[in-house]
Image 1 (tube, rainbow, N blue to C red):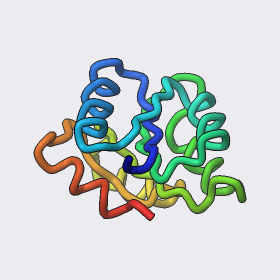
Image 2 (cartoon, one colour):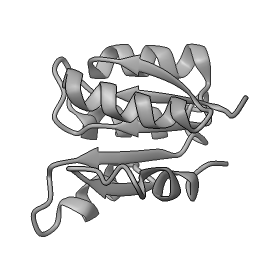
Image 3 (cartoon, rainbow, N blue to C red):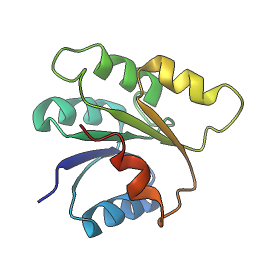
Length: 121
């Protein structure tokens, strides 16, 4: 089986779609519905990759990325922001917060796996 991928996403439809695409391609999708749960699961599970929404309850994606990239347990896990934040400067802001990559929503199911696989360790 391919690696575990943590999906931190509060929108049920987006979570379902991303998880479906990952699992269809042999990955184990581990869901988290808010930032705090995502950080806790990242420490427990040690996924190969984290897919992170930016607009989250409890703690936004920027803070999640900062905490994960600043923690020795999780700092080497690539984080890909998958977000509808698509204004000028948003990509740079996510990278500055600690994300490795950036994909705009809505995702393209036909290219999504290829886009995220480039970030896998």
